[in-house]
Image 1 (cartoon, rainbow, N blue to C red):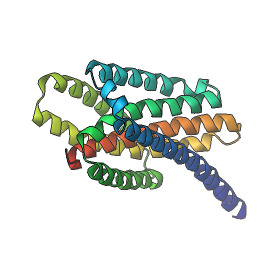
Image 2 (image 1 turned 180 degrees about the vertical axis):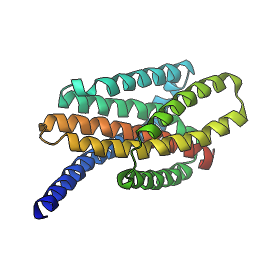
Image 3 (image 1 turned 30 degrees about the horizontal axis):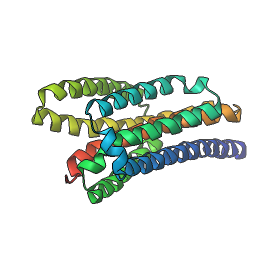
Length: 232
């Protein structure tokens, strides 16, 4: 009985240490994105040039998205320093892209929505950490929903349907809240497989996990901002 208890304690310690690293990298990335976003929006010399042509932010956003997709698929092939550096670069680029929210919404509503998002994200993470049922099927369902969400969002750029806009907003809240639950469970399960791995491998997997949760949070925040944000 004592040996089993010790093994259980060791396992919990491994998972807790790994998840602490994941959340730490995520918090750093969110802080960097927020700081860059606010700096760009509060510096007229930058945002007037950046938004002088609607094509510039669009191309920049597409480039950032492509870079993010590449990073998600390649991060474990990079060195630790390159993985961390690329994640920091991606967080910075996304901060520039998201600077527009400070030009559209009031600072107070952005701050309040951030705290609402943090609370909801935290609750979903707790659910993902304690639920015993395997959520693999739920995750596949959410990924299919995410693909449909992206396609419908692109289509609505041209149709500009308010009904579709709000439908997609609430669907998006469900998808990204669900992905937070799924990704949290998936990362905790991955922690068991990392036992005995070298520190560089663990760090790269933690950075990859942080990027997944970072994207879940950012997208959840943007969906909630549509609902709670007060426009200028």
